[in-house]
Image (cartoon, rainbow, N blue to C red; front, side, top):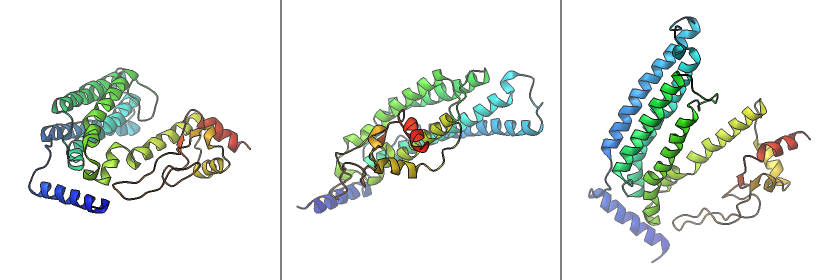
Length: 274
């Protein structure tokens, strides 16, 4: 049987299983909990934002206490939107999408409830309280103090076990291509690179502008290994569909490779100083 026929047979078997209702269990209780938490934190964050906006026109409004000052309220507004609303909404989304894409349930219901408690009662709520008390970081969209960041990292580690392991346990022929967007790919690479560029702008003290021409110029001159790692092994083939092989230098599957952030700024400024 050809690879195409095997893939077609696997997809047909999966379609029959789905049409008969034999789907992996979906943790609807966790979905409802995260949706409820996202709506509650959204309302609270909007109230923070309305108060901040009001202070532009009425600076003395609610100005009798330090925890009601503009800066602390604004920090709590942005962090509530990011961690409270969007964070909980994404987790609810993952609990529904991962079992459908991986054809496997998430790792553990108990782990899911532990993750829910960590995210809301060790990140969002303590973060708000600590910021109101004057403990924060002067970083855009990362104003929660470091002690809260430690629990954010813990939550991300738990998410890997909860949502990525089902994909690793699934057979390759059963996976949808869109499952890649849960565990990596564009949806992770694009915001990661955006964060790196934002840090470069902050480090430089001014916007660096469109980076691609200089990056491609550095690569074409063979200078990419000075600030990155050239990926030369592997390809992006999937489920019997041929892709492109990684080669030395630029290629369709890996581009120039993986930049090393701590080396990129100096190489960038050295190039532009010429």
